Image (cartoon, rainbow, N blue to C red; front, top):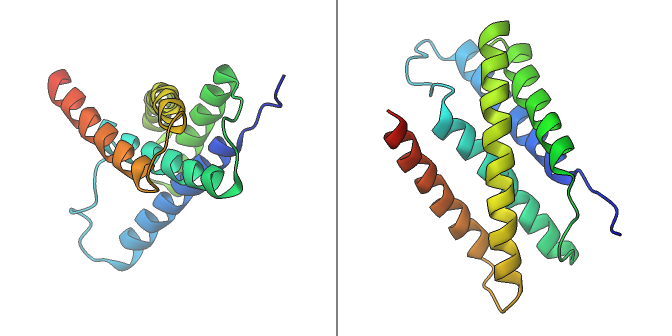
Length: 151
């Protein structure tokens, strides 16, 4: 049995931390913060997909074929990441941060599972270096369509 890796959650924490830091810096130094995006499903999907694409490229350049994942712990750590980082950055209060954490964890886990299955299919044959980025872009467009259906 393969050892379970949590590198994807580490990359997610780095991407969410960088996004929160950028939002805090823009809020501190820019006089107009109306153009900052809301923390909604497309924003959470963009951050999640960016983390998955970065993780895929790290695995691609290090030669890892298929990392083993524990989906329950992946979801739990994504919940903590999406809950605590916006709250610590002051982007949301405690109740809203918990809602963001739950929605972000569900979205990240589903997207990671879908991206992982697509990735397995792509690695079974010859694929281009840009394929993970293209798949991530298509998944982001699908999330925007899903958000349009919900509203």
